[in-house]
Image (cartoon, rainbow, N blue to C red; front, side, top):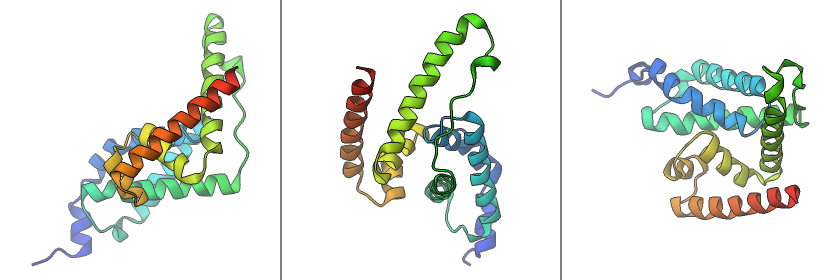
Amino acid sequence: MPFRKAEATAALDWDALYTDHVGRVYNFFRYRVEDAAMAEDLTAATFEKAWSKRNQFRGNAESFTAWLYTIARNVANDYFRKSPQLVALESASHLASPENIAEQLEQAGEFAGLVAAINRLPGRERDLITLKYGADLNNRQIAQQLQLSESNVGTILNRTLQKLRLELEAHDA
């Protein structure tokens, strides 16, 4: 007797799926926005949407990844449509210790530069980078997500990384 949709959805361990994916979804957003609090908000929005649409999900734990990152990409697109300006760097007044301020500001500046460079990429390249390095998905999962071949994902990633390196080196020069 085949599972009905509700039974299949109930068979998934939503707590385990959340635990497995929450850090990667957060990192996906950290590569898109430089503000950690905003990345947390976008992560929460993604899981809220996934939970509210859980009865529409048809699949298993493997296909859950593609489904979840489709939601995350849509949340990111909605965010940037509503507020296209990048979030400004936080002020240094809240940093822990004065001796670490320069180092922390330098790291924040480098990260902000990386985020800005990523956000200047065309959509497909931006998605590839954020899914690979932010969400820590493998090329097969990314290929499924973006409907590309695995080899195409690898090729585009390589070219995009070269482009990012050149842009960041030119910016530092």
